[in-house]
Length: 388
Ligand SMILES: Cc1ncc(COP(=O)(O)O)c(C=O)c1O
Image 1 (cartoon, rainbow, N blue to C red):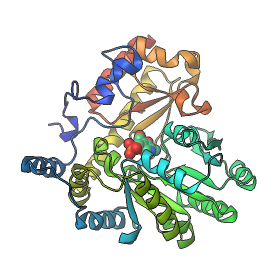
Image 2 (tube, helix red, strand yellow):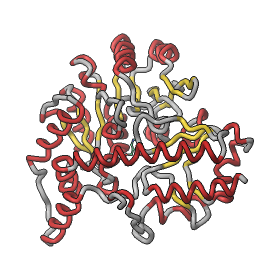
Image 3 (cartoon, helix red, strand yellow):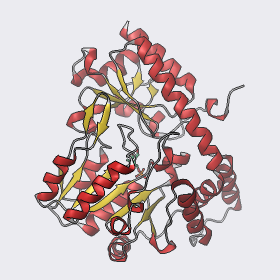
Image 4 (cartoon, rainbow, N blue to C red):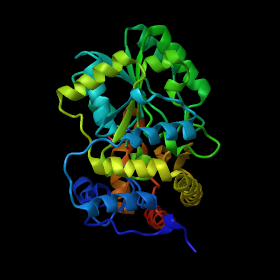
């Protein structure tokens, strides 16, 4: 008997970006959508129950934030990440990307340079540039299929006066769960040059067994005072459509600036369905999450094994967390500019083109494996045919 994650749920005609947005974005229909990072799984039943009950009440007026929401977030961080935070450190934003935009506009000046580490989640580029700031790239290094930070290059940027960076931890798309030793090195450098870190930890709950996510701000009070941590139940429990994320800011001065910006934009209220869903997920979703991680790990192993059989020239960067795979297709012999077209038109699969993750993404594709394994099997069949 299959498990809950084996269930095939039709998402077509639900306004799903992943499924219904394929034609518009890829110019073709009937592709297997393995791109934007949400999953094709139902969240924990407690979430569905809580949202359904609240919906059935039928009155949707203005609401207060439930006091126990803060409580469940604190407990979640304590239990999953051994991070003790105070209630007053928690703010919110309508999604992590809006939170990053708010932080950039509140804490940096127009024209200021901000470091990111490509290949990386494309909106990092957009959120910096759209706010009139300047992107500084500190590309990750890749040796023998493992990505690491280039600290020497990073220090050069800090030495030249850069005072802010966006960290992606765990890292999308390369799937690294940064180790404590790596984060300590980052801590040292940011302390030496007084750099503020916007730490995007949206993937923090999705580290595979054997890898431990360490919140950057939990390293020391000094690091905490220079870090804004962005976390959310959206990736963890597949709740992206609720647009709710938590922004943890221990430094009262930084928090005041962040919250003033929220206020200026009239963004202080939250969608109550997001709160209801997230509270239920944090309160009752731990066991579901452990089962999910087990399923995702199996999907990773299965995909790596299948790709190895189909064409070992596609090299998979083995992820330590997340539900995306970074596929190195440079040896396939297909020019980088034509690669996505090959997957779309010949294999009929919609991956994210690696190019949009920065120049070092040329020749790569990002594959979302947050789906029932039979869907991956079908994609592998299509790919085998396309490559034969
Ligand atoms: C690193 C990272 N940050 C943020 C987001 C999106 O966050 P939100 O939808 O809350 O804006 C994603 C989604 O894939 C992501 O990978």
